[in-house]
Length: 172
Length: 101
Image 1 (cartoon, each protein chain N blue to C red):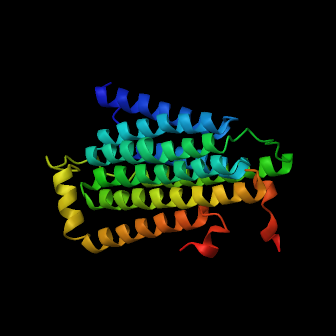
Image 2 (image 1 turned 180 degrees about the vertical axis):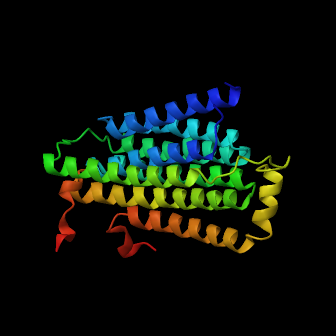
């Protein structure tokens, strides 16, 4: 067994285990902290898949920004764990829909995997900042700029949503 | 055993299924938001595995855009969550059934 296989197994089991803990943990803070570990495992898998730039972005954006934002909200609102008892029917229905999704995906992957060729070798610059940046700023320039507008809209929307209702009367 | 594309796709499917399970069975809004993030990440993993498999970087560009959209989604989602908290004082989705019709 090569090093890559061992790393894959460790990261895959780590991500699945922590993802299960995210879903089953009773307290939101526990969920958020397990989600950090899931994100780090996924970043490790991205490195194995020759995507070091996206691995760095994953850690910066998810572990560094999104999870911290979630933790801030959880702690500021002082969220307690809430009563989570679903009716039996809905719990069974939810689990079976999730299981069915998994089954369909598994069947599709296993049926398709017989025709897949092996992983090809990739060029030296594959997934590095320079080549991805070149693509982003040439072929995908319009999408890149549209994304910046999207982020601006999300920022303004978030501020507008959390503003208290009575502030709008005299302010602005 | 060599790791190939099918292993990564199966892992991605498992993570996606776990996310679906969380969205369908939890009642805490903020945990549901985290499960949606988990599903987005599962899809990102399959994009990157396929990019590696096809030796084509364009799928990695797609993942970059998905990350941007995820960041915007979390910002707006948390803002909605905070205004729900102010109005109802709870994070339980059972309290949010006003749109039932």
